[in-house]
Amino acid sequence: MARVKASLLFLLDIFKYGNFAWTLASVMLVYIIMRSKRTIKASRSAAFTLVEIMIVVAIIGLLAAIAIANFVYARSTSQANACINNMHQIDGAVTEWALEKGKKTGDPAPSLTDDLTPYIKLNSSGSIPSCPAGGTYIMNTVGAIPQITCSLGSSVNPPHVLQ
Image (tube, rainbow, N blue to C red; front, side, top):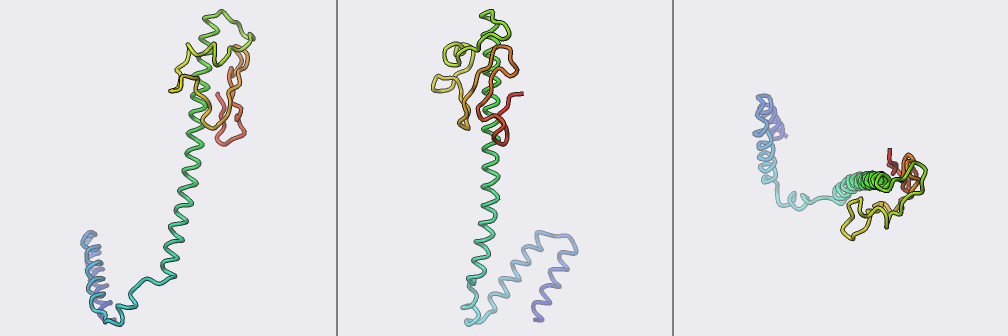
């Protein structure tokens, strides 16, 4: 007990002068010295107990659950952003198509696959980008606000709504 008290006073003295790196090193040194002084009988009981291992596993599980929830939310946010970006590109393509073809507000919407391919950057498979969350794009009339909507719309969080 006297050895523990002396080592704690030593650590407090080092910590008082603000040398934090030496404080950590001193803690480790005191721990190693105290551990080496144990008898053979004490070293057999130096292993981790089942309760300690279960607490560590529970803490790791809790941290994993928090991280997974954040990853799911980040994924849904990125899918919504990609969907809104796709709708913005398609909306611009509809406007260009309408100007070039002389269409007026209220005219029928163009076909996504046939009419708009020259006006939009196609994805790697050579087609108009689709909603990454599995929604489908619905064309409204020319000049409508918005000219295109996602079938998921506000039914998901965050919403797939072009503003």
